[in-house]
Image 1 (cartoon, rainbow, N blue to C red):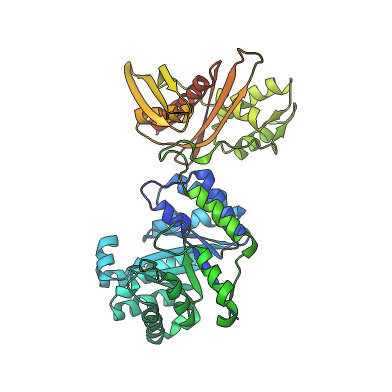
Image 2 (cartoon, rainbow, N blue to C red):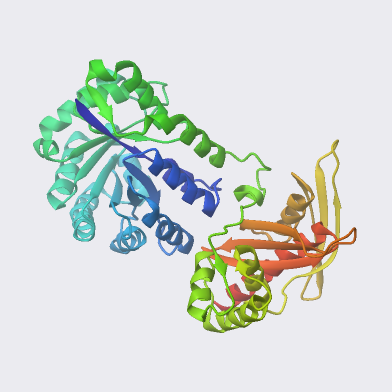
Length: 471
């Protein structure tokens, strides 16, 4: 039996879109689902100086048990270093160098002439190999490359330490038999390909991706690229279907966790699809309370700081001191769980002069029309107005604020609860926004839960504006 490995590009392709459809929390969940599915390699990306990308990979790396975590690098030593620093905590780290090898892609993607690129490949691959035990060299648009240049590029990558070489039919122009013939000729031209893992990326533009997969495997490929939610690459379930029907006769198997395949793929598709408004802040949904955190009176500052960090906050020593003082006062009356600690951080940490102040809001909702919100904010004495539709009055209000600010933030968490009893009960809202990988919490209280939510959002927004002004 021949074992085939699966390298899934779902997250990597999502990150290259102009507007990624998943939030920070959902990306972590997608990686956990991929790991539960036992995908061999999860491909991600880390653009240089992108704090959010690095924090995402730092967060996810220790959670993976089965899958290797691959990070696509920028084609510079600095880009390789940034990718390595983001994934080095993973049990199975992997660096990916995607290099265009056709003349069209070379000019378009990296502005290099063939001679210059051939000189760069050994230096980049050897630098990556010195950091990481697994290095993949992917020849982008290989099927339209000049045969001699492709041979030299692959040979240079292998000599420099690449452990996997992937050949990409980026244009999707080859028929199955043509692709298998292409791979056989390539292996004859580069005999050292027999010593490394040979991967393929089969485009499904002509709806022949599955047939090309089988042809590639029969020609010697042992790693297949998949992607959920991509129209050009086949999902992992496509190869699973091939195994179910012809696995025994083709003498193929893989490590996929078949019993959870359908459920895991459905969950990932749900997280990738925007069921809310296309620009809805609620891409992450309302998060459940994590009762794993429980603090008691007498817990020291280090314990409180560890729990604050567990919730995702990065606080200065000054803010942490204020949070701890608030914790001490409240813990004398009750134990402190996740919700209470969130509220303490929101009300005590990073108290700043407001950049935006709420002047008026009007929200409308019914079962026969879309929810709308009209928000009026004051900034530096100027009145700014935003109007938006939404999937509810709070969603519409948040979108209206985003329209005024001109920026979308990940809504990492949203909580509402009553803090007094009776018909005139006060409602408390907690909003956690993520900007450049960092979490900011805002708190609002009002007898109107929509008003409380708007105040909480603006509180978190003001903290983001203050910190960005200091940088």
